[in-house]
Image 1: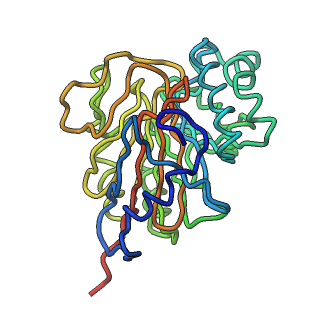
Image 2: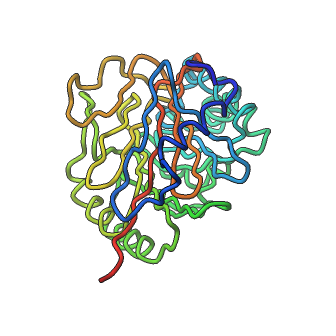
Length: 309
């Protein structure tokens, strides 16, 4: 990989693997943590390893405007070097009308190249989304407002939530699902961020009260959210790494709070998606803007529960 563009994808991987885990030492019990962070001039490459879990996170995108189409084109270009099979949606999948022609204009047309390659999009609903979207075949929700999704080739499970209506039934379902999940990586996906430095929305404190205790208790490592229209990686909170990836179509330029103690890395001057690769206990990430610039990158180690005494 060059310092700022997407090709080739794997040049730096072995270097940063050795830096992240010197001497091959195995990590011990503890919180999710960022092992290594790239810079705009020296981003950390995705390993692009055979058999790893490769996916993209996208949110707040369905506008049918030039911004959405341009970022979708970059996603397809990126796919040529990094063949991800999954796109995880953090909500606000369509803005405005939701007629059949709107689904075509705001989703099927911009992402046609990826859909034609059999890339699967998995939906979570945002506040702008009609709940009937759960029946839309290409969002793969199977009629469910919330559901869990097991990755096929790594020990990873996604918990896709409806944060607009966090009703008691959903919270009871979530606790049962988290408690029963045997996967090493537990990843929450929902729309409204419980940590965000956004000036328009920011942290949803009421939702935090409901979700965070479950995330902590049941060993969630990462949460992907949207709603605020920018990209932000939050400093780890109670051993969990939170992302805001609400930059797929809508964009709130300058909305990230300057000097916020929450922000590990923020980007609010262009649209962006997040590319992720999980291999064993490590998660590699690249946030990529419309021209193909890597605006954030790094390696995260998953949470490890303490051994019972």
